[in-house]
Amino acid sequence: GAGVSQSPRYKVAKRGQDVALRCDPISGHVSLFWYQQALGQGPEFLTYFQNEAQLDKSGLPSDRFFAERPEGSVSTLKIQRTQQEDSAVYLCASSLARTGAAYEQYFGPGTRLTVT
Amino acid sequence: LAKTTQPISMDSYEGQEVNITCSHNNIATNDYITWYQQFPSQGPRFIIQGYKTKVTNEVASLFIPADRKSSTLSLPRVSLSDTAVYYCLVGDRAHTGNMLTFGGGTRLMVKP
Image (tube, rainbow over all chains, first blue to last red; front, side, top):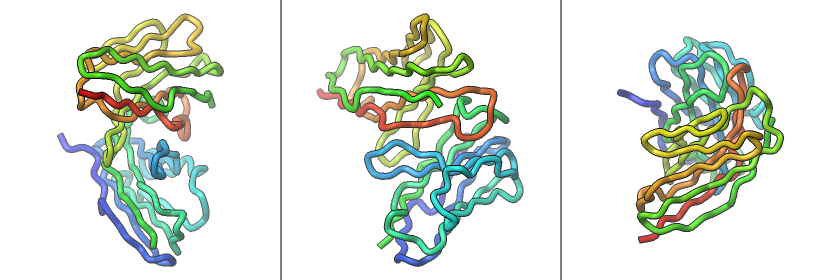
């Protein structure tokens, strides 16, 4: 069946531009996570949604980062006024479980953002 | 959050069994141990999860001693396609939010 999809797969932005990254989770999955993965590092948590509710945004690095999931399915991660340190792969994951990040998460392929 | 420690890298040869050990000295009573695999340019993929003793699936086995302060992921007869980064994580099932910390993972290189 269809997995988690993300678009675009690659994005190049000039410093100062705004970007929007899309995640289509597996249909019916309640939980949705965003992660940031720097080159050579493991994924780092950014934010978590349970349906349309953003229950945890403690990992967002600054107020330039904003995420939404208005209808409880598709999610968008927006980064305003991009900086070079925002260059990374942004991963989206979804889970059938309502609680507990320890339940199996299904990851998308990620969006590689390069800020020049 | 329980912190995990695992080797940065490991080398192996095709056909060998590979064991990757992870330490998690501060694991909590409700924490489960989960392993993910990540290939280049892909998101992580769930491999196996356990709470105690031994768990086996079609891909791997997970050995957890009684004190649960460590765990060992065992990959039988690895092939070149098993070259990847393997992450050990601990987290519970009861709470929402940021309960998964990936760390740096173990880079496994399988050689012919």
